[in-house]
Length: 354
Image (cartoon, rainbow, N blue to C red; front, side, top):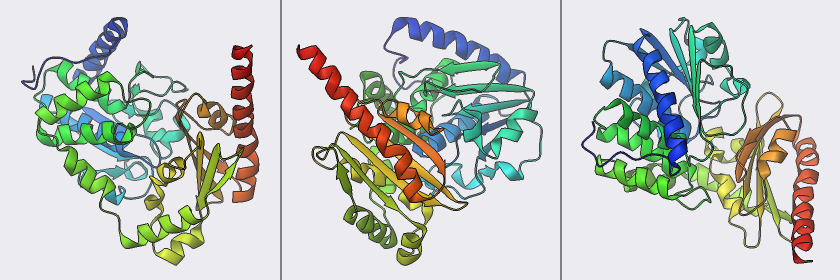
């Protein structure tokens, strides 16, 4: 077993038992596979990349004889702010991966369409495993370990590392800490529970550096990125007496500032910071006539319900979607159901007070 502190696990004892049984089945599939491909969702964030890279290191350390490849769902490089994670430079676009793996592991997603170029790889794999914390999905897998109560998939991967008995190295711990820190918004979001803090403490004991994650992810913005942020902040608009805040970034914004598309990541948090706002929306125009939307809720509003209406998904407090159309059409599709969420919450509150 890892020397880095005692075993951590889900706060709920029953969830721990279920997860342990799922880990046993995943362990068996890994042991029976010679080639393994790992992939997370399109437009990967810190949890997606940190979890995939940590899992690759776990398998490589525990089963050095196996061939393990970390895939990118898109034909695009790893976002610059995550380039510090060990193994990021070796990730392979799924479109360039021609093998038929014995085992395909989908991390941080359970919806097949979010695999993008990774979906054909999954479909030709002999066995499929899903490890996720999103509540909705459609992947038919041989084993699924899906725990919506986990703050990040990085939490689950850290517990899997302890389960299989590998020594959690400092680079491995850094990948998992990046996953946990980014999906909890530096422990500012509602999902920052005791389990997330316990896992983070374990990872720091194992050599992870919170300041290192913070420096790379939150304190190393290019000047072009800051100019883009200025444009986005300057056009924040509010509705419903300031309770809904939204902004957007266009392709012309990127050309004007010289920023890259992945430098839009994290701008939702700037929109979310508006005083009095309860729901935040950020839209970015992407090539191919599509709009990618991020939704955040500060309280009781379930923004995943709205994301699902537009073909997306996620958590109650954090969700996303991709809309085929232009910016005005996307706003027309998403703003009415967001307003309905506000009105529904008000009606429920009025009912409770009567």
